[in-house]
Image: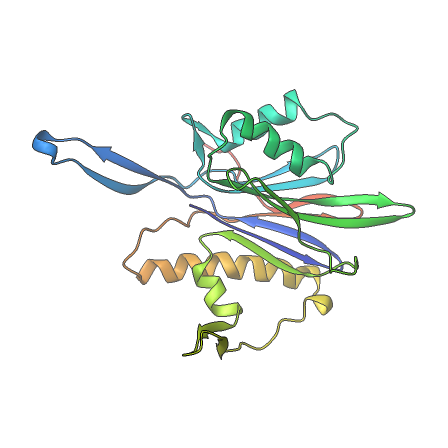
Length: 244
């Protein structure tokens, strides 16, 4: 499992992700006494990627290994085999999902795909949520009337940050939903890019720190990678580097 957070505000788009890869190991014993255990395989996995020539960011969540190969290798193959220099951020999500569904139609893997696209003289932000097995491609940063919306999108191990930021709902005796707890609103339209970076780190760091004290698999962890996209370009705010 993973936690990826994308915050989109007027100044730009911030993609952030943890680095932990969890796997389930099955041990088989005699007389059907085998067992399964979830364990941490790595804290150095890349889950956020930059397509430099187009300033497009991709974050991946869900299963990281498909046929024994990490998701990073599948994304690299997609970019080499199917992605042309003429494509835009608007067409990448559907192409990426179609590419993976040909070989892994039931893969529990999803993506945030983000970037800017020129519409006339204006660079318009695009934020997409997509999923392979669910065959979903949704643009998240537009309102029903077509206006640009601002906010944040998080996927993967979302229960902790969701319980903090979103209203807590419950059904009454009649089956109607009512609000049990309504947190104060976050003013995404007024948020600066530094605050968007800070929120993304907060969401992932709070999840990691909360899991530490809970009796549950610790499937979010490791360094936090942060990619910033703006109408003027893209750059890494934080990124793991190889070292010896």
